[in-house]
Image (tube, rainbow, N blue to C red; front, side):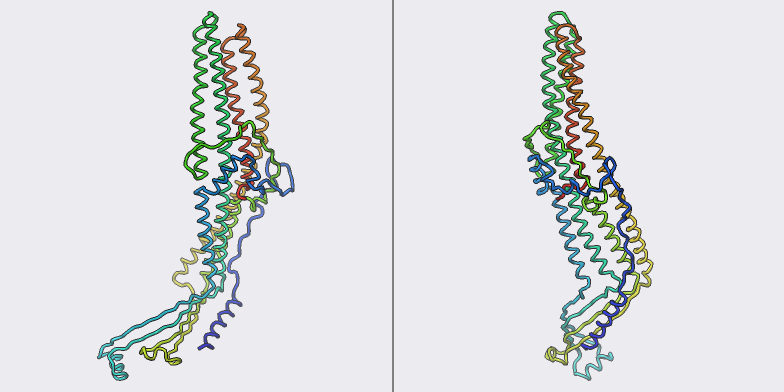
Length: 472
């Protein structure tokens, strides 16, 4: 029996070696998907990028680092992503056993009571003088499919791509969380600054109202001047609870990101004290596939689609399966272990070709090919989005700096205008409306200046995330 088994196994290995080939050709990642350079960036071959910097070194504010640390450790979405990686790893480990024969142990016992008038019953009575027969078997069965067309190999490739893709999904999620935490913190500092501006403006309005009341008592202005001044003061006062509301909402949003219940957030620095970085190291677009997790994930999706095409194409061809069974068999328990008389064994090998379900299998192959074409388009789209986001961030960094320069000059001019308007109004050389208008313009400009500073800080974070930074 050993010789027969050896011959069949040797034959199967020979067929696998001689016939084994790739039944489908993989589609490579399209190289023309990347432009040579980013828009709004100087032409450069420098491949270094701020995305290579760990987030703990990119952000220097200790409050942001503390918040991001908490988010990376406790964010529920990140923990779900970790479980998805664990599941994908199990699936990949499982796929490694595709080439290993399936072996099962079995122990069977049966009894048969044929009819006395049946052929079996008559022969049984004559042979052993009994009306029933028992059968006892114990042994092992083996089943193995030869990977002639690379089906099992492609299953492993697909599972491995899925495992790597789950890691990239987690990385992409972390880059977004890191960016969102920093954005939320900068927004919190902006709201703090705007709240201080509103309070200062309220005190300024209160002072102006008192001056107008003195002039009213002196008969130099009408009651309308007092009413308009009071309305201006109430406008500044209304901003205070609105900003306090927005501060609480922003703190709550940061709490969700960091995996904690709503609470206040520590701020040890003011918005005006933060320095806007001017990051120039952006690298080249082709490096996005190794730095941006979502682009890498799209590339891995194409590899998984290639593997699926190979699997479905292999289903169209004959499959070689080998089965074997051996052990002990006896109709009497006393002879069960009478070796070698109780030994038995069977070996079989055969090719199976889809026939009636060939149309269904071919349809699955056509679907897999279409899915692969979708994966190529999805990869190209992920590159387009990534390159566009980098270009958007670059132009924001450049133009917001110019806007800040003009707005600072405007605020400086309005601050001087208020001093002049107050002085002229007190000496009767200016109308009260000029004072109120100057104060309203200053309030709006100072609020805008705080927002511009926040936008600059956020633009740097957006550039860092767009280049693929934040997951290291």
